[in-house]
Image 1 (tube, rainbow, N blue to C red):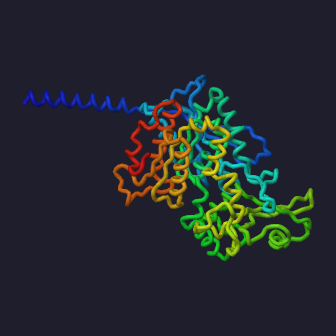
Image 2: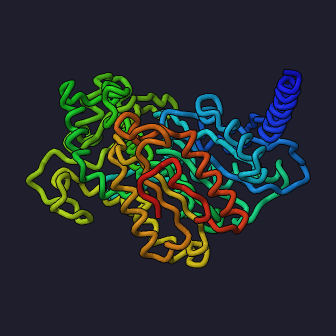
Length: 446
């Protein structure tokens, strides 16, 4: 019996030792999150020029860490990733366990007056000429990030980086912004991670997207004020309003300030044309000029389906009959799939050396699976096959897909963990395909 107690006591000590060792291995060191304000020209129209900055554990202000710009989705703001998604905890864990090296992550604000900027320079659109006026509408967010945010952040935290130490990533609208900013400024970003973004605009003509938009519009009688539709119950018109405010905002004025018959003057006196997807957002009086201004957005759609579709679309696509020529403006200036062509011309060397991670849910309720597949194929066909990791996820390890499907923004904790590991490898020049990306996402991996 004495021998039994001795063995039991030794076993118990061994257990405590192992437990202590496990606790030491899993000790998590914590970084910190700072809020900063960016000095920006008021003329750019940036609503909240702030950002949260994650600094790694044992941060050394004299060190030039790799830096990642993490862009939030539509309806969020610069605090979303920390307060709703716990991104600082993900980074603490990955750094403390040695899965990634210390990194700085910057989360800027991309929210404007309509809920999301799409990280675009929003300039008032002239449908008569198909061009843009030199007037800022809902904020010059591309210029803000590229010219103001990056330089001020990096000078504050260790000095400017070159593209090999700078990455950009995001979810949904943030994925769109990351793709667009990379393709228009390929010399600035060496790695990109895109989660569930609208990346190929032609796919908006598939999957009943335009039919869903018209269903939203018809549900309350095709009112002309877009504010009547905004909210989750009309998700397609809400997102369409955000996209249209970024790509084709409208403004018109009439010169009789005593005339308060707003709708007729905004819509029928040389102003907005309700047959071409124009929606009124608000009216403003400018006393110094003696005018009223009607501000709104122009959807790239038309009600007259007897006229030919826009020349830039395949007429066989289900939604092509509803598309106006304004859609060609969207494609030419704002479509990531199209912008690949200009990046190839303007930055051929940098483009071919960019490391790209893409993931999308197989059950994405915003029909973005087809976008991501098309965007991925075009990248592969233009030489990025070896620099590309692509994942389609459905469920996660231990969770059956039929109960926990891969949708637009779920499983984000797992997805961000994977893309941060990818970013670490990409910005350190390591093999980006060395990881087992299929371990959690489980379906398609290239």
